[in-house]
Length: 212
Length: 293
Image (tube, rainbow over all chains, first blue to last red; front, side, top):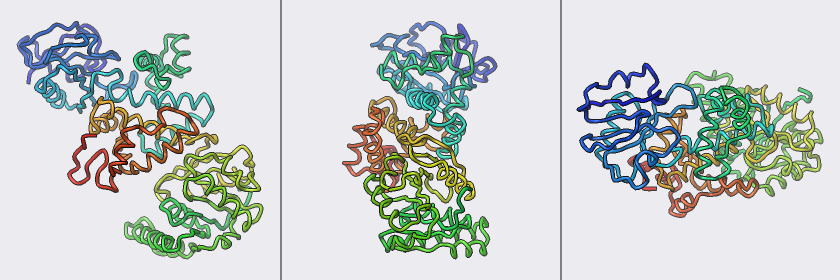
């Protein structure tokens, strides 16, 4: 399966030097078109058009009631500014055909990535699940339930996590944490997604660079 | 250690957690008395503990002579009065406040005033449990992870009235057992369950809301975050009915909507889909295929 990438800015899924970028064809007649920060334009001749997403909905690019059967969204999961993981969350709108989803899955799987399929909802799977937990950990830290070291150690020893929730948040950077919590809270309105105190402080003080 | 611990009692020792705690204590060289009211279950737990130690010898993780010493240090009883000589009594009985308070009241009657009482509760308040004892200063939270004989972590929590001496002695004892204690405040769920119970519920709600399949939720969490087990696979392992009980213990004391029992979980339990133990939960353990949940 061949693919072309149209890229109008840095991709969070495929940073400079990523093998997926070098595997793309320059030929316009490929099966799949991958859009990274590039505006969407319909092209029924493609098996699939893959639109890279940040914290937004795919519908923001193609409309709420899209009829495009060959369009699928995607995002490679990253913890803040950590390197991208192997996980690709495919975003399947109601209009997407099985063929488009299968093509996207095959493309990313052949690139050595793991694919899951999510509905077109803010936060997709991972952020929707992990952000409330991270926010709770930050609140616990503020409330002095335990030290950061003890909370992280507890999760590693008690739950087998490779790293603790707090060390992940701080390593990934508060700016990213603020942005993703803001997007989730704006959509769902539930307190669990509200940007936590530390992220608000970091965002207001210095634009929210990496750190606590 | 500010008080010398030589003999340890474990209440609720017929259960998986209690039996594991007894192994931890005996393995570290403490005389260990396992207490439970159910004699048949206590006999079974004793045999299972012996089998665990035998397996450790077979695997080369324990010398046969050491095994014999551990077995020799362990005894069991259905008579609570036999805990009278214990320096530390750890309770791992049913997760119910009235049950735990009643146990402490009975322990007050048989134990010396300087005996430390530790509670293995995972969700209840140490301060509230300690109110069952006439000497709440001697009560401390000591939450082991399952299986206790393999997991090093212990969440240690002082109640409002726990004395510094009690906490420090219990803390040092866990270290003497080769465990790794962490200190938390006496708050619902301490660290582990406060983070885990709502997270697992959220995973159920993602499936219920049609965001993704159970298989993809678990795959996403394992691949994206590096967790060894997905949340739905974990719920299947601990039992969907157990997750309901955790919610029922947790929600009323936190009023956190994330801790409330998800409707899908209730429906699955009503349908008898309890996870691995029933053969089906979020996953089917006959064919390992995902259910339509």
